[in-house]
Every structure is written in structure tokens, then in C-alpha cells.
Image (cartoon, rainbow over all chains, first blue to last red; front, side, top):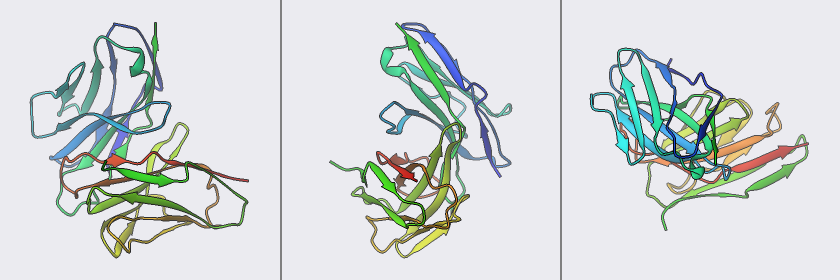
Length: 117
Length: 114
């Protein structure tokens, strides 16, 4: 079974600075997808960024980028120029690429990010 | 606008009563999911359905039941057999499995059982 681990329950960053959230996962599959979701105080889950395991290039979305290390099974999220609106819970998630798989996301326990003005 | 609706946002029930949480989507997605979120636990899969009239148990299905009579709807019933039902419940949908398509989430229902 696949597992996702986020080792940092809480993180803090100064506004305008950069922060990196860690995520490791365990799987025996060679093809899969990885996601970072943001959950602000409203509790609405919002997709931040996704990465296909077969792609070597790290995904980027504006101020958000990932460092995907497939051999190490590591998938960290870097937030640049942090803004007050980035304050939220961040969840790392895994999804199998196998046809016929359940299709559900397997989540880590989350990292609560605080942004200091 | 396309999306997922869950109602109500807050739900209160007495212990021993069954309660049904609503989930509706107009995204024309085949697959729908129910997750439970507890503090410090992340999200855990309760049930999922990849097609109408078919659904499968997830990791924590005991004490829950679902139906999928229409593509748009995937209600979750929390039965009196669920030992610790107080939690935040999230419904999600996506186009299918084995792909990188985004999984869309509803706004959630906070259930409190006393």
C-alpha cells in the first residue's frame, strides 16, 4: 500500500520570503501522480500543483514549484515570495496511474503554514 | 458555474440517529469520492464510485453507506454503527482513474454528534 508522509506538522515563514514544505512517499509503482493541495481556513481544498512521475522536469505554477526526486521518493513544495494569503494547511497527495485503480488520493497528514507580516 | 455542492455546511445529530450528507456535482464526472478529515489525520477515503450504480469501500467504510443512483449525486449516510462520527466530511469528483486529472472538492460538511 502507498503511504505519504509529511514530517513538518507546522511551519512559519516571513512575508516575501521563501519556504519549503517536505513530503516523502512510499510506493512500488513506477507510474503515479503527485499533488499539493492547499486548505485555507474556509476548508475548501484547492489544487496548488501536480507532478507526473514520468516527467523529469519539476512542475512550476507561478510562485509555487516542486522538487521531485523520484529515486528518493521525495516531493517538496517551494513557495517563493510568500504572501499572507498563503497561510493554510498544505497536503501532499499521491494517486496511482494504473488503469482500473481506485483513483482516490492518498494524503499526508498536512503541514500548517503560518505567514508572518 | 460547474462544481460540487455539499449540504448542509454544519450538521448536528444525537447519538444513535442515522444522518445523510448530500453531495451533488455538475461537472459530468464519472468518479466520486467521500473522505473524512480529522485533526492531525489528513483525509481518509470512506467510499468511492467510478460509475452509476456501483461503489466500493475505501479504507474506513465501517459505519457508513452510500448510493449512486445518478451520475450527479453521491450521498453518504453515517449510521449509528459508526463509533466516532464527529468529523469534517469532504466529497470529491474527477473524470476517472489512472490519470492526473484534478480531483475537485466540495466545501465540506461538519458533522457533530452528541
